[in-house]
Length: 151
Image (cartoon, rainbow, N blue to C red; front, side, top):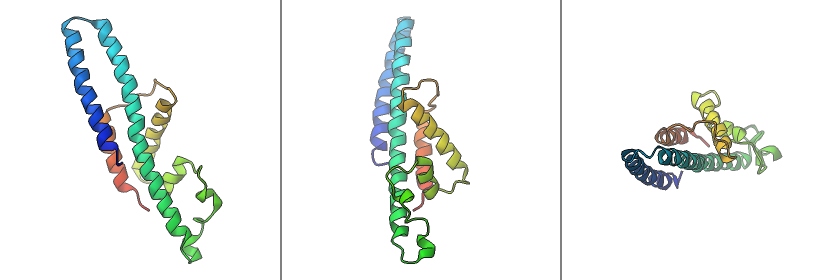
């Protein structure tokens, strides 16, 4: 989440300039220009969405690695059980598994995170049909979810 404030500040800078440009084009009745600007905004917001969610993914990965290392090193097998298996120590542990190891999967936020992750994947692979929603709401969600993660 280290870079999230910088990413958000860059987005806010862009959005302020975008709004000014849209206003100028609206005054000039440049509908085609506004449509082009909307397309650019949509593409940029999808990229920002992916970058922002990536910050959360990095936090999940860090918490997961901390949890695996702490539990796998525990000399008491009853606490270590399952945490020292190759499937958990592997580099290719799926995101939903990593998330389930650091956030209670019964929490409402767990499902919402996975829905957001699906949109992130859609956008990261060139998809344009899933709406990304409000960037401000995303930032608030990411900070809230980050606060729920446990080692």
